[in-house]
Image (cartoon, rainbow, N blue to C red; front, side):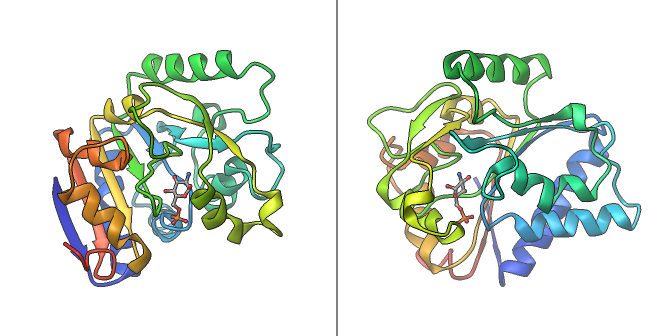
Length: 241
Ligand code: GLP
């Protein structure tokens, strides 16, 4: 694991954007795994700036998002589909046909999950997977569990995650209790992984991920076994390392 401690959120976001740009320069038709949450927002802003400056071209890039709430339509402002359009896709020249996000409104979730896995494989696998991390060490929506989930699946969200994510909703009752998420196996198959964390509330999760035992109780701890992981943290998230 390569750990980079940035001074603050802004510095973390700029470093992350430069790594993503390098990936696109290296392989213009690369496959990016993308994440939602508040953490990557300024990374996406920086990518938009660099795109507007003519530094990057997204026209050949394919993207796969990690997860989506189950039961939220795409036009719901809290859906991850909406988030990605508002925070990135609407501002760059990515081809709509090359954007992939699990369909949270599917009437056949088993089929949706299986097809998502097949699509990732058919695209040649993920070159660079961007990750945030939950306070409980979740990645994507892979919650602490007694086993590592291999594939894209339907998840029952933890109380802690529902509470943490309720800040984006009018009330906690509005937060979906389920989501479709790429599995730990799907994430670990990515050729490179870039995990971002900012703020003191992530310090324990980062400590457990980097220094703790590898356990499905801290899903991100499995990243210790991946051959190419970069973690960029700000000083507060790095405070226990
Ligand atoms: C959600 C997402 C994760 C994200 C996590 C942390 O649960 N499914 O992909 O990493 O929240 O979010 P934030 O970056 O807002 O702290």
